[in-house]
Image 1: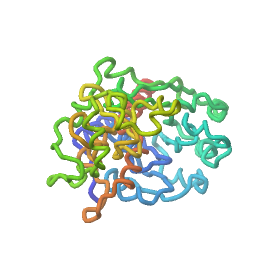
Image 2 (image 1 turned 45 degrees about the vertical axis):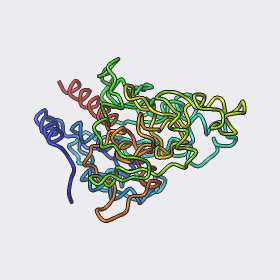
Image 3 (image 1 turned 180 degrees about the horizontal axis):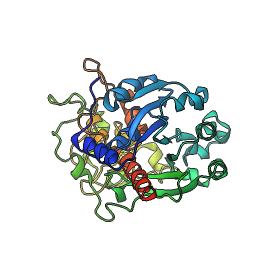
Image 4 (image 1 turned 30 degrees about the vertical axis):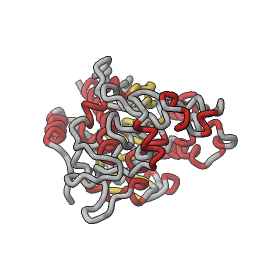
Length: 366
């Protein structure tokens, strides 16, 4: 198995071992490994990831040298997880339960709170009770912090004598070139734990910093150097729309003949970012599973007349350029890889979580 780990990661792992910190983690809801890869980058060994989506297996295993367990979290027992931890290690359990049921949009839909996905956080809590790891981390949408299910989750942790910390994080504060906001929770059996201070406060990485070096391509074109640097061709009307768009502008900048019917209704006037262009000199908007679709958000390239490519979105999510998403001879599909990338925890957020855990452990171990 080829393992895509850089020299800095190896250096971090050696430093961790030199400090007598033997650590390993299991990643619930692992997807293609955004959180896992960030933890590895920070110096934490991840032995296994669990996810219901079997299509994530290749990318997860080939890039992270970790076992992919294709299963529903509801079917996994604590005993199975404990098999991946060694007795003399600090044991870490991390995960990001699918966030759709906790999102602001979903909660506008009647009956969403009764959906099965709401139970996934309870399943996370069950596995904590069955395994009693030393450290726990959970990442999710900020809206979750207002929900009763989240308060129940914290009460359960405190009942098991964990010290709990959580914070709504603005990702650019930690060097991520997208305006994503996420809830990060840390819990420890060893005492008070928290995130390291922001690393890039008011020194944000921008779209230009992240993807400004990439080859220029047009809509419907594929790079001859990079098979993941391609995008779909825009329709004639959407080409006119993006040509009329300015970075950080809105569809109100267009001639009214280009407006959609929804733009003329009061309900549509609040969605200013759809069909928008990103700005070179600001962080990108939150990367979603539909980043390749110009009409689903501010996913227009700052100057080229097209939406984002897979490569651009993956870099904005923190994945290194050598991260493998598909097998060598497989044909890349926007819908499938778009879902993988958009649903991933940003790699750099995983790195920050990992560095916070290591700092905590070093402080507690003198």
